[in-house]
Length: 113
Length: 116
Image (cartoon, rainbow over all chains, first blue to last red; front, side, top):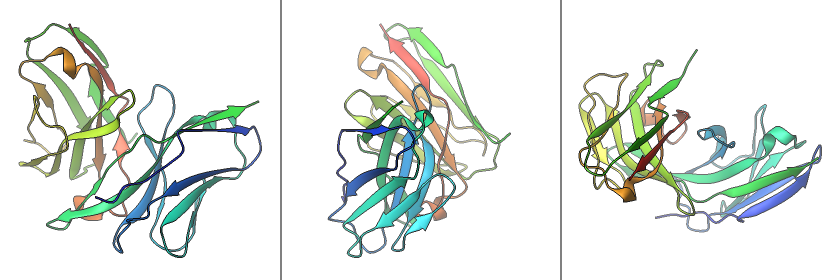
């Protein structure tokens, strides 16, 4: 199974950009890269996803390496509300047209005021 | 408001006493799933359902049962709970299993279960 590797924890100062790295060296050609985050005492929430090209939405940007073996989630200006565990996940084809998302342990982001 | 609702949010029970955690979504989603979250282990999938009457095992199905009789509901059943099932449980749903590669999973707020 393709897996992802993320640092256990990171710190950022408030209002500065944050780059959260993810390695997925065994990614296959059909795997999408997803990012979710989990705020304290809440369920995970979707952040962004992509296949090959860089992606932007209102929450974040996703930069995908040309060889797709790594990606980076970019929060342009960290706020205290962005303190959460961030999960980098691959959606893997599991047969009969279905895909599965397998969550790892994620990166705990702390934001310093 | 679009949401996934789980009940109960907190429960303390004793070994062997059957319990059901309910999950309901109001978004007409085909795909639903249960996860458990334990310290140091992240989120692990228990069971999932691609549509009504279609369910399959995830990574850690032992000791759990599910059913999907209606599109909106996906209850998790612990027939004979044991202390190792003490965990935080999340239900999630998505529009369709066909778009799991590009779609978004919506999660409930979680159910914290303690089995004594």
